[in-house]
Amino acid sequence: MTTLEDCRALDAQDPLRSLRDQFTLPPGVIYLDGNSLGVLPKAAPARIAEVVAEEWGQGLIRSWNTANWFDLPQRLGDKVARLIGAAPGEVVCTDSTSVNLYKVLFAALSQQKDSGRKLVVSERSNFPTDLYIAESLCRERGFTLKLIDADELQGPDSVLTEEVAVLMLTHVNYRTGAMHDMKAITAAAHAAGALTVWDLAHSAGAVPVALNESNADYAIGCGYKYLNGGPGAPAFVWVHTRHAGKFEQPLSGWWGHAAPFEFTPHYRPAPGVGRYLCGTQPIIALAGLECGLDTVLAAEAFDGGKGGMAALRAKSLALTDLFIALVEERCAGQGLSLVTPREHARRGSQVCLSRAEGAYAIVQALIARGVIGDYRAGDSQMPDILRFGFTPLYLGFEDVWNSVEHLAQVLESGEWQREEFNRKNAVT
Ligand SMILES: *Cc1c(COP(=O)(O)O)cnc(C)c1O
Image: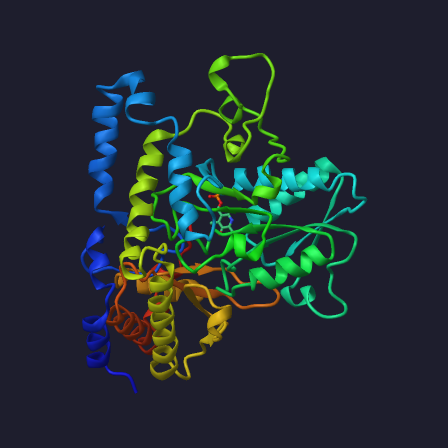
């Protein structure tokens, strides 16, 4: 049995403990939703104010040069690259995840347009925006979207056949927290002649990612989840250098032009990753994203300058292991089932529990107590889910203890059955 004293001892020994000081967290809150919206870095308000008052207010248009606004997407992309196993110059920060998915999926489909392959394969349980974008692109470009369950990717009856043009997967599932083996799946897709598109929304800053080592083709990811970039922060795009010169940018705006300030009448794409940009970038939002990226990269001090993800991963697994163990001790017999894989190699940085009844209301009752997680509706294969994200940058072991204690109390007391917790808000 783990005790509160054990958890406090783990915090006292935690080498990453000081990283929490980089954040402003409201008092009395245990924040288990960094997988949906990361918390505010302490540096962000002052930095954003400086960009507004000084760079915009005083520098005005000169700041494109004097404050280096123009290459911000590339400079921040180089920071993201350190977190996802990519090289400098291979990533840009821009647009939203949905828009970036449109761009890279379009590019991958264009590369396959003369191959005779007609299928785009993705998981039924993928995040809806990914499926919606793929649906419309397939319709426009004459492909068919085939939705599968994860187990259909393996074995002799694998769906990866010579009909598949693109395999589009999210590395860590947003609801279950299950993580794919990127390297093995990419190899299987390539063996079948398909290209891969990976969504890293729940991976970047959460788990180690090795894009180049996995030999992946295209990847995109989100700036406001584990990267703490702020609500609606710019997302990012990566492409393997073997495709860089062939990438077709469907949104061929002037920022992706080889020489935007020549103002020529015809589009000529920039040679490298710069062609993923479309129009003028949101400089204030990019400044916020940089503050968020720096909070993650601060963990580099704990792994010899290798991006920090190995150190963060070790703590993340310790936190999620502890949460699972405590829930099983303290909430036994309360109807909760673990949805997230126990196996470390298959687990992201979140833990999801399902319950046949009351998942939404239980989450609301926890939020009223200051324990902020979230709820995701179930489907034909899975009951409703209580979702808890664990961000090792600002969560400690005592936080885990306290959150399970609150969960146990909410369930034992039946507090969640109150009417106020059963009324649905617009955003869940
Ligand atoms: C969060 C998330 C998104 C978000 O896309 P936006 O364009 O930022 O709204 C997309 N895909 C996945 C898999 C996500 O988890």
